[in-house]
Structures are given as structure tokens and as C-alpha cells.
Length: 94
Image 1 (tube, one colour):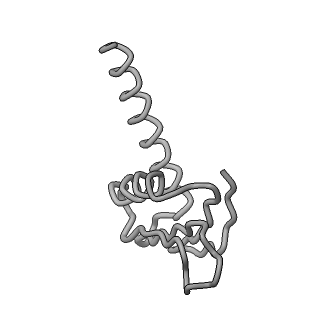
Image 2 (cartoon, helix red, strand yellow):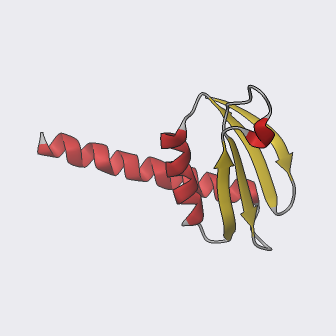
Image 3 (cartoon, helix red, strand yellow):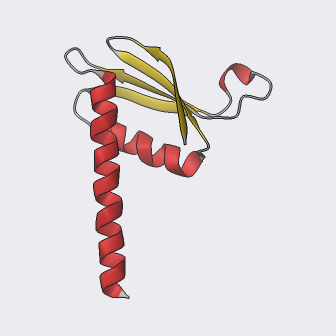
């Protein structure tokens, strides 16, 4: 996975996430939308129909007092916790 920050302001972050597809991006977007202080989270796989741009670009908008990078960190921690919990439950059931 390769990350490239496109824009990082006080209330908005746009980051390209190379090597990922809709599956991962939807999970990350969902976790962001569950994060306190996040007002919007979305991604685009072909922004502006740029003729070949296929790496997803995640955009996170936050409310006053919430830094977008902090919100992204909280969301990724939640994804990690959920996948660990699922793996543990799966292994216990096997």
C-alpha cells in the first residue's frame, strides 16, 4: 500500500491510497463515518476522469476541533480491532 497526501488542511484531508480497491476503501470509509468529528468521508477511483488515474483518493472532512489525520488514525485503529476480533472468532469456530 502506497500513500500520497494530496491535500491536508485544518478540516479536510485528501490522500491517494495506492494498491487498494473498493473492498478496503468501503471498510475504511465506513469506519471514518462512525468516527466522532467526521462530517463526511468518501473516495473516488477515477477523479475528474483523468485518463488513467485508477488509484483511490480518500477525502475526509471534519468538524471544528477534529484534525483529519487524527480521525483517520482512529478509524484505522477501529478497522484493526474489528478484523482482529473477526479472526479470533473465526479461529475459535474452526
